[in-house]
Image 1 (spheres, rainbow, N blue to C red):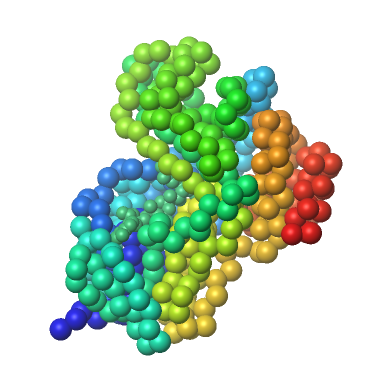
Image 2 (spheres, rainbow, N blue to C red; image 1 turned 135 degrees about the vertical axis):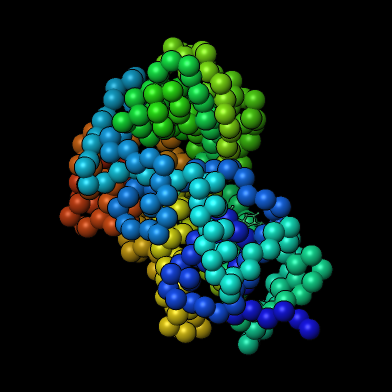
Length: 384
Ligand SMILES: Cc1cc2nc3c(=O)[nH]c(=O)nc-3n(C[C@H](O)[C@H](O)[C@H](O)COP(=O)(O)OP(=O)(O)OC[C@H]3O[C@@H](n4cnc5c(N)ncnc54)[C@H](O)[C@@H]3O)c2cc1C
């Protein structure tokens, strides 16, 4: 007899586990199966987001910085602070542990690791899943496997490539009350390049080397990143003596290409379902919004007609304009970011970055940037 579930979630990563959490929070008690090919959960990433909108995992944050800065190529600092909004950071391992504990508390949920999904076939009244040579069926499938990423659309896609090291020092080196979102005091030769520094304590920090490049560009190896981190810490922080506790790496698509959202009862979620914000690469908060909406529709039995709305439509237009200007003139962006963080109020800026701003506060963003390049890009975007 084939196993039958109400919901099967493919992938126990950020979106798969978040969706399970949102379904349970919404009161869903139907049978849920989660399949993932990995054999264990590893502390493979950290998620940061602006604490503007509530999300059920925000309490797990290890740190929330209420002061942050951006450094231009010449070292000029744009500093901001806000009591109301913070930049929250969640450790992957804490999220995975919490999600597994929630699953263990709910007998209607089964988590199956070492389960590689081979195929998914959608029928009018059910979905058939083949994993490790065994079939099961579901009323609805939510798929976060990366296989559904759209093909690279040539010249209009950028990629955010980063490599981070969690380092520890013997003596106090960092000010944990302020994080550095972007430090552009590094070579801009191979695309927009900056360092991201999250100080967790005076002796611990995540140092991330980040490039935004044409998606077709290659050549950044882990060893190159390690060497760049070492020289950044040495030259700009006078720090040569540290130990590396852990590393993380990623490549996030920054593209206006349309991602598939659903094929009948087969839904795409997370990065594979278009949750990445094209202009920034941030994904975690959009995942929470997507999962919240899906869970609401599941509980209301309206999934058949469900269409998500992750953010008001104008942000897609803004993102298209931003990506166009970034592609055409990456060298201008350290200055643009510096202007944004020095001229726009923290409330307006964080609301814009979190897609919760008003037209009035968006005007502050527009006024802080040079009109010419953005207007030309806006006109091109309107012409398609
Ligand atoms: C290192 C790193 C740091 C990041 N930091 C941030 C951040 O600070 N803020 C932010 O907003 N975004 C961040 N992101 C982007 C984004 O939030 C994450 O990539 C997030 O994990 C995406 O969630 P997801 O569910 O789409 O994919 P994942 O979390 O990658 O989950 C996909 C799951 O599918 C499984 N899978 C794949 N193929 C199969 C298969 N055939 N069968 C079964 N299972 C399969 C994988 O094993 C994986 O567990 C970061 C990304 C990375 C890589």
